[in-house]
Image (cartoon, rainbow, N blue to C red; front, side, top):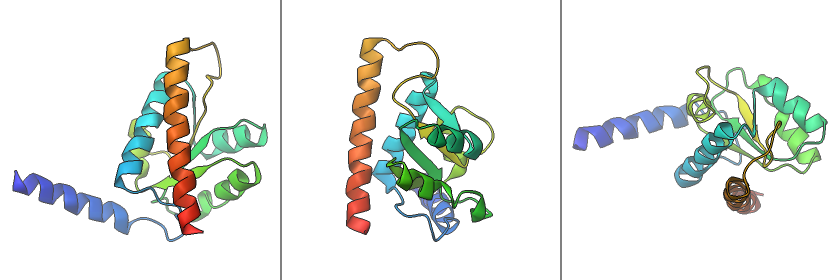
Length: 153
């Protein structure tokens, strides 16, 4: 059992070493887990925009949500404009250490640079219970991200 935890720690260190220096605010272990869980739930309910192109298009159209950006993107120039767009549109954003984990949570096989979690699905409607649960998780994580951002800046 001890070797499993050592292997996990080594893998976590490798992920953290690959993170770009501009990846701020970077979610801690607990916030990262919560955020990826929200991304997974949003993907199940079709409330997710995946990839830089879709996210930028959605932000420019005025859609609101939580932008989750992978911190280990290379070259970093691919996503450097996304935080600026988010700040101009008053959209909270947070970095997570791994693009692979972000893709897994977003139900895709390809590694994903960024996703935009929305509270309403693009097509159709959610049941009131599911909508309320998604909004509650969304607001909790947005509050945590806002708190993290205020301590950094």
